[in-house]
Amino acid sequence: MIQISNQIHCDARLEQLEITNRLLPNPYRETPYLIIKNFFTPELCMQLASMVRKDEDAEAAKVKQESVSGIIEADVVTKYRKTNIYTLDDFYSEYYEKQFLKYKPMIEEYFGAVMMLSTEIQVLEYKEGYFYVKHADDSSELVDEEGQTVAFKCVAPERKLTTVLFGTSHRDSNGDYDEGFSGGELLFNYLYDKHGEIVKIKPQAGDMVVFPSNPYFSHEVLPVEKGYRLTLVQWHDAIW
Image 1: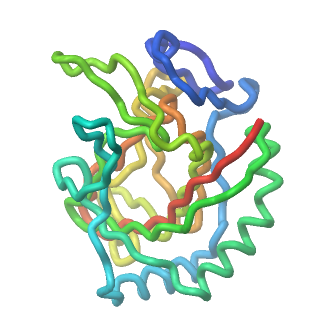
Image 2: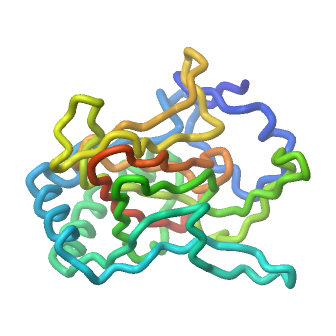
């Protein structure tokens, strides 16, 4: 294990692999990811979740795959990912952008980076049984015949930072699932806490999680057991 912040360690095997983007925040931070509380208010989150649930204009989210020719293509592959994707309407998009400008200096200071262009906001819906397997946001993972990771190939170099805003809250097994969910944790595959436990984020509605898009922060969305998981996801280019 390699300590990368006061509270978090990462898998030492990553140091042996070729990784194009190795952006990490100051190692004296408590965690190498940032959680911004109340980016959206709970009331606004409830309204957004209600609106998305009523919207039937969704498409299945896609995953990037590399063909034999070396061309990166996107396709719907449900064994890797089961998610619905929506477009954010103008009211919520404008409010999001206003809030993002407010918190942008905090994010840049935390990661020692200057943020540049950003992608469109994706609204991702996870119903019961929906999930997303392990992946890095900027790279494809290459594995050997035994399933061991041997390298990462950067396929989206413009993705330096990832932001995930949660529109619904994680609940325990006795929670209220009207506007929340159990399961569906955001799990970082190579990050471990001071007790040696793998890092799982169990968010509240309105929380924004910010982390580098590189393979150190490979992650997955565990299957939603009950309820409704809603996130707003965006990727950002940056220099540091």
